[in-house]
Image (cartoon, rainbow, N blue to C red):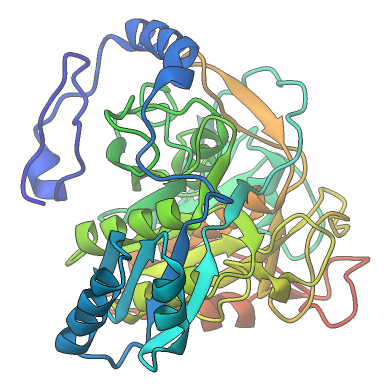
Length: 433
C-alpha cells in the first residue's frame, strides 16, 4: 500500500505507510462523526456482508506449506472439473488456503488430496469479553516530571496500568513508562470489530485499514470491543503505549462475531500491509480449535509480525481453542485487582502469561468521550499488546520468539492466586528503569 484517500471527516480511508500519512490532518469534526456513526448503527442490518458467517456449508482447505504454486493451481483446476469452485483464496508468507462449497465429488477430492493439510468448516469466533459493566467517570491523565530523563509518571492511572509496574500488589494510581519507547514507530493491527476513530483517546493515531465483514465498509466500530482494546493498547489515558499507531482490521460484526474466512482475510491484509513495518497484531477473540487460523498465525510470525491473543473465557483448557492453541502467538490469561485468577479464563499450558483483565476501563463507542469497564482475557491480551509495542519500539532488532521469551522470563512468578494446575503463573511485569 502506498497511499491514502481522505474522506470528508479528515481521516484516512485506508492504512498507508507512516511517512505517507504524516501530513494527514486529524478530524476536527468528531461530534459530527459520532452522529454519523449512530446513524450507521441503525442501518447496519441492511449492509452487504463480504465474509459469510459459519454454519453455511462453506469449507476452508489449507495446503501443506511446502506445496508449489503449480501443485496448488492443478488442485484448483481439478476441483473446478468436479464442479467445485473456489470462493476465496489466501496466500501470504507460507500460508495457502481457500474456501469453497464443494460438490460430493469435490469434497472427496479435497479430503483425499496429499497436498491438503486440513479441511474444516467456516467456524465462529467471538470477542473474548464479559457483559459490559457500568461506565466509570472519566479519569483524566496527569503526567508528572520525567525521572532520569526517560521515565514519565501518569497519575490517577487505571489499576491495570499501575499493576504492571510493581512486584508487590500496590495500586497507588501511578503508572511509569519510558516516553522514549512508548510505541514510537510501531504499528499495532487491531484485528477485531473495528475502531471508533474519532475517540479523543486516539488523537489521530488510530486509522482504518480493512473490512472483511461488509462492503462498502462503514469504517467504524458498531460493537465497541475493538475500540475498547485499542484504548488499552494505545489510548492517551487508558493505554499502555502512548505513541503507538493503531490500524483497524474489522473481522467481527456488530454482534462481536466473526468467521474463519473473515479472520483469514484480515490476517492476509495485515501480513501485506505490515511488510517493512515494525508491527504486531492483536487478535482479541476466541473460537474452537482451527488449524487454518493457527497456521495463518504461524505464517504471520514467520515474517516477523508478533501476534498477541487471549486464551479465551470458557473456563476450559485453552489448547482446545484458537488462537490460543497456536504456540507462536503470545497467549494471555487474566487476573483481577487483588491478584486473583479470573475464573472464566481458559487455562493450561497453552497460556503464556497473565495480565490485568478484570474491571478494566477504556474507550467506548457513541461519542469521542465515551468509556466503559469490561472484564475478560481480551483486556489482558490488549495490555500485553501495548507492552509488546513498547518493547518493539525500543529494540533495533527483534523476533516474535525473543519477545515472547522476554515477557515470560521477566514475569512476576507466583503473583496470582487460584491459578489452575498446569498453567504458568507469571504476572506481566514491566518496570520503568
